[in-house]
Picture 1 (cartoon, rainbow, N blue to C red):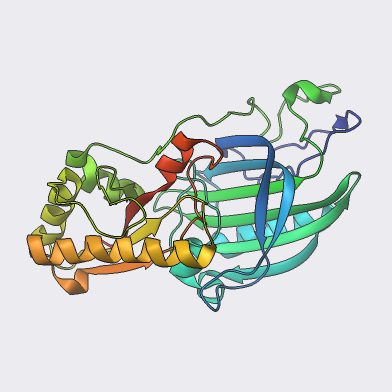
Picture 2: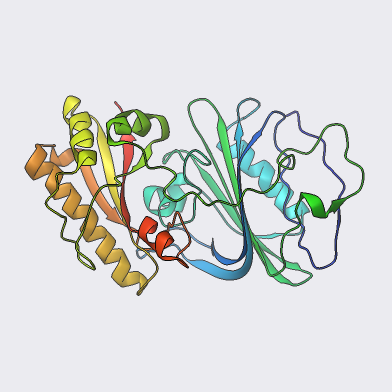
Length: 325
């Protein structure tokens, strides 16, 4: 496998050196979202008993993703390669799984994943690896997710460290003529809420393009699973798409903000997804077999829960395309 050339970096005191994956030549950095202070729940086991076991580490969090348009040998080979790189970087591997052993849909929607277009996950073909190492300022954690689209491979790396991660400006030394993949652009501070929200009329197109969309116009009574009377253009569009081909199936996934316990929020989010499912069946005539409803509570935010705007964005129901056959 042809690779980019690694950069030899010297890190300023007090900064953490992030894991720099060596990826096939031509890999494109899609997401680079950094938080100076937050947490990452590093998965440590498969989905079981309605949750993904994890170690919740506080600190600076760096979330990055890449698209690999060529030279991608498959999720298994890419994951094995990245695991070897993690071991070389001093990480102890604590968990590794493929889609089936991870827990499929349930693992994917109970662990952190960047939203499209930064990251796409094939629910039947992904690999996950996590590990920990002792950094200069304390324990550091990492989670590596590998999947693919029909056209390209996808890699996501989420890291957490007690010390801030170095930025482009903090790197010193000569740059080689061929930079390491993933180090060629500045960090992007993500200020876009609900980045996967599109106009209702475009829902069918974007469902098939990204496999995942927010039904952004739904309204629920405060603290309740009761769906408003509507009408909701997102449901009009989604129902028309499903009724046009009864082999199409979607999962409705409810999400909440972080206020309250996980158990309460998981149940509330599930009930809201069930309410949307019932509306599609009863009011639009969508086949019950074309729908399923799940709730993941506050485990998959798309914005910070530290602001009211972010909490509003996180309270949502999404449609996830399960097949197009």
